Amino acid sequence: MSEKIWLGSIFLKDEGGYKIVLKSLEHYKKRLRTIGNSPELKDSSAMFGSLLQQEAMKTIPKIDETIKKIHDGLTDEKST
Image (tube, rainbow, N blue to C red; front, side):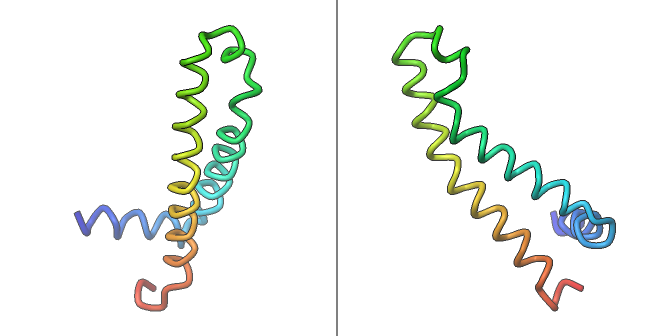
């Protein structure tokens, strides 16, 4: 398992992959916040839309946590 983390670290730090990952996570978070405005949900049943919005709101803190871990990993002196 540690080998995968090490390889991921090379991609994120040395190759600048963290920019792509962070940009994607921010976009995903914005999309989850506005999922209620989606035309697909307006045509679906009320219960399904409500459930999807609840799950989206539960996912946003996990995205924030992941973004923080990436930033912490980039500034961590031990991993360089």
